[in-house]
Image (cartoon, rainbow over all chains, first blue to last red; front, side, top):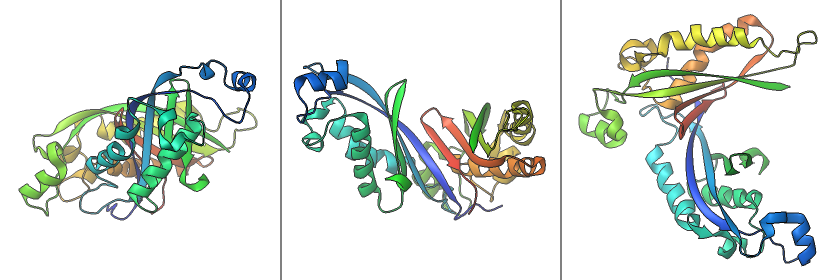
Amino acid sequence: MNAAGTRAYFGRRYWLSASHRLHSDALTGEANAAAYGKCNHPHGHGHNYGLEVLVGGAVDGETGMVMNLVDLDRVVDEQVLERFDHGNLNLDPAFQHQVPTTENFCRVIFGLLKNALGEGRLEHVRVEETENNFFECTKSEE
Amino acid sequence: MIFLTRRATFSASHYYWNEAWSAEKNERVFGRCANLNGHGHNYTLEVTLAGEPDAVTGFVVDLKWLKGVMESEVLAAYDHRHLNLEVDEFKAGKLIPTTENIAIAAWKRLEPAVKKAGGAQLSRVRVYETPEIFAEFRGGA
């Protein structure tokens, strides 16, 4: 049996802690409070975000790997963790014109990793805001 | 279409080593995983089948049957074994037992039994090496 060249997927989980406040400048104070509830409290709040990254590709015949996890760790560290971990999402340039909902955060991370990994490598990104809610951005539905 | 997943765990040891490479290159590429004494993990196997619920039973497949197939086809071969030394597809010169290759090999072990049963199709096999590292295979080439 030789799996060389067969397409498979490799996934890895990461954690980052950040604060945010859900507030849209396009809405009144009252409408913001109605839309976002306690997530609109003025001083923000934080989460431990779980990040799941899935890359796809041919299994290398020599290593048996889709991608070396050391290389994936480096990309995720440089692109995502160093930028957002222990930071305030609202202050990041990516959220100057969009609300840092976890939907938008997921799309931002997908875009950063897609560019850094190169065409066709990134399959999906899943961001877990708490144990009970999560958001996914997938290559085919980007 | 419904996707139904069953999970099982197994424990096994392995190491990464490419026979065609020098010891120095194996150690550089595979790092700690190239220790020839091996090391072990608690693996989680997730098997997803896709199909329509049966009009009478409401089942895509009988979960008890799926549990039996996972045990007889995969766990019986992998659980509490040294993958490189005791499992045919990972012996020296064959596949390196990376998480990717374990997902592909588990699919190949499961596929004949799932096909023989008719009905639901094998859709995805996911193998977790640790809670933070996993690989999945969706069939095809």
